Amino acid sequence: MKKELTQSQVWEIAGNALHDEQYRTNYSKALAFVLKDKNLKILDTAGGTGFPTFDLYKLGFTNLSVTDGNETYAKELQEKFKSEGMEISAYHSSWQELGNKISEKFDVIVNADNSFVYMDGWMGGETPEKLENIIPRIQMCLKSFFEATKDNGLVVIGLGKHYVPSYKGSDRTFDSERNGEQYHTIWKSTFDWGKRINTWTTRVESDLSEGEVVRKSYLITKEELVEQMKVAGFKNVYILIPDDTRDDLIIGIK
Ligand SMILES: C[S@@+](CC[C@H](N)C(=O)[O-])C[C@H]1O[C@@H](n2cnc3c(N)ncnc32)[C@H](O)[C@@H]1O
Picture 1 (cartoon, rainbow, N blue to C red):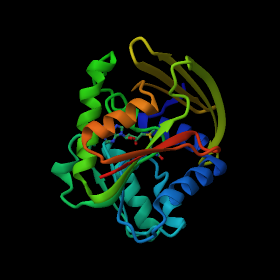
Picture 2: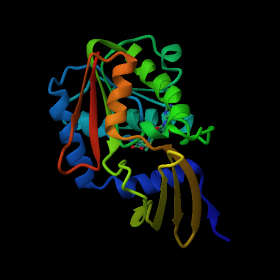
Picture 3: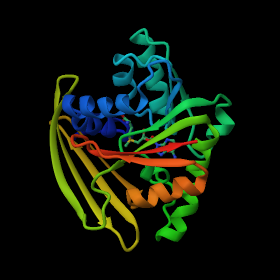
Picture 4: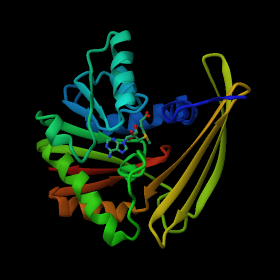
């Protein structure tokens, strides 16, 4: 019988397969283009396996902190930073509770890698259907980011370019290696724009182990996100559409 992979291990394997060299390079270059000043105090709010924090650090942005709502990811990241000799703190906090966990304010809040839309569904929480029910959930997170940002600071949110009503979903496969083991990853996503819910199944298999995770994300467009950022209080909101990244960047100025 094959060993059952944990939810964290499934994302570590699938995430590493997705985050190939080109993906990381193009994405972190786009972020660096927006951020410019290497001394900015930055909070990466979707720490996960460490993208884009490691990449920004390599580009010279060293005033970095990280949070993640998943306690295992936050702990593992803290260990990784320590073992690499990087002075970066990794906190465990949901976006909704950020203000209760971290009292500091940041020049920039980064929420990259199409994470924002998983605000409830990544960790298996309730995901209400229909835009009118999703908007209060979005506002809760945006206001929390707004509060954690200094005046004139930025909130940068990566939203998948495929978050458009014409997109109905996909099947993708990736092959990757972890600790000498070869893995095959199968992603299936189904976009239901009527309900405004994407159901995303990730299945990872090797000769020795296997695991599957089903997650839900909210379906919003970049234009809707811009509008919601304005409602949350950002005085200016821009969209950066890099040619070579999976996400567009929605940038709110406080
Ligand atoms: C698409 S993954 C991207 C993670 C990261 N970029 C990486 O390299 O793994 C989304 C991340 O957001 C985190 N997350 C999702 N909803 C959250 C919430 N409400 N509060 C805090 N973190 C959350 C997840 O735990 C996960 O690490």
